[in-house]
Every structure is written in structure tokens, then in C-alpha cells.
Image 1 (cartoon, one colour):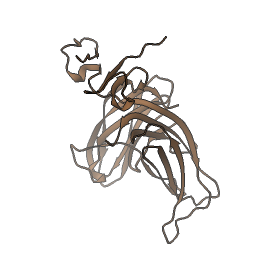
Image 2 (cartoon, one colour):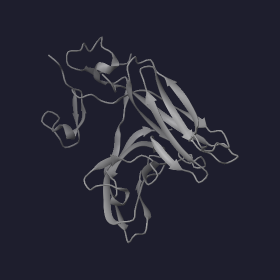
Image 3 (cartoon, helix red, strand yellow):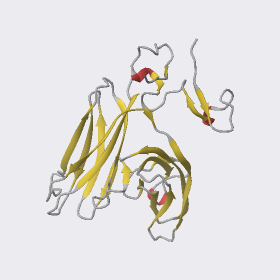
Image 4 (cartoon, one colour):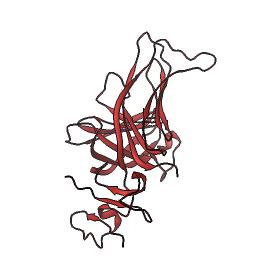
Length: 140
Length: 125
């Protein structure tokens, strides 16, 4: 017979409480954090969108060994000078000197974090990110 | 010796199955809810574009994970009662620092947009 572990919020009976009042219900799948880490991606300078619509592209690959396509989340700092602010990807923004997107895809071996941008300045730009890969299948 | 509590999906052997077939295991961290609630932004309208923010303070002392969903303002082509995830997308979004969660949206219509947020105990640092 399957055993179920339930923990309820204060003031509720774990045996009779609705699911919404349970802190943990082991019969429901939780988001299990499997791998997490941080990194950064830096642009080149003087990257303009030409007639072909070409953007600069940089990416980082995060290798995982789950063997299936996992769920994930990515947070990043969206203004280089303000690294204390973090938002969630995907992102599409304007910086004043350019346009940028930060997004990602995942497969059964890696999470690839993309930074596409137009940077018309002489300076490079760096975006710092934090990734979380869950031990939960995105694709069956 | 550490003790691990596991619960598997139906038809799976909890002792031998992979992580993807466990509903819960105490060996992996989970997102732990710290605070949640609702937010509201009231735009004055009148054809003047305005970006408004609402700040949700926390006392965690570090940048926490978070989730924000809300209506897309009519001024951005949204419809009441339809919710989307607030990621950083030019005119709507959310970001956190070590003191607060900031939610922002823009509109040029007289309207009220609302949504919900969750702040997690888990750090992004």
C-alpha cells in the first residue's frame, strides 16, 4: 500500500485539509531542484543590426546528466550597472544604445542560455545569470 | 547517516526509480514559499503613457527567487481576466533585489491592472 506524507499549514488537519492548504503532499509531484549555478555572458562592442538584420549572439551551455528534457528557470540582471536587480528570462529590452534578448532552450543533455543583442557602443556589456534545472520532465 | 524521505509516482518503485519518477525526495531542495499576495496598478489614462511600479518589501537580506503573474494592461493590448507571467518584456515585468520585489507595467488607458506574486526563501545568489 502506498504511503502518503502530508504536511498542512498551521490551523489545518493534514488528513482532511484541501490540497491548497497542504505545504507538502507527496502524492503530487514537486519541483525538485537538481542543479543550479550562475555565470555571465558578455557582448562584443560595435555590433549593429545591418541590412540582413544580423544580431550579435553569445551563449553559454550548461551540461546536465539527467538524460531527459528537464524544466528550468533562469534569472538575470538586466542592467549591467545594477547587478543587484534580478528579473526572469525570457527578456526583451532596450538599453538606449541597443536592443537585447535573453532566452534559452533545453534538451536532454544541456541548457543553452542565449544573449542576442545590438550594441552600438564602444563598450562591452555583461549580463549575469542564475539558472535552476529541475529534476522534472518537461517532455515525456 | 542522513535519512532520505522519498515518495514515487504511481507504479514506480521508490527505492530504485530515477529522480524524474519521484514526487518528492528530501535529498533535493524545493522552492519554499516565503510570502505571497496580490498587487494592483491604477493607471490615470488620458492618452498619456505612464509606467507604474509597485514594491513588495521582504526582509530576507538576499535576492530571492520569485514568480509574478498579472493581467496585461489594455493599453498594451491585454484583456481583463487573462493572466500572463511577468518577465522582463519592455513594458511589463518584475525584478527583485535584497530588499524588495518590484513589479512594473505601462499603459495609456484609464484602467486598473492586478496580479499575484510569490517570493521564495530560495536565494538567487
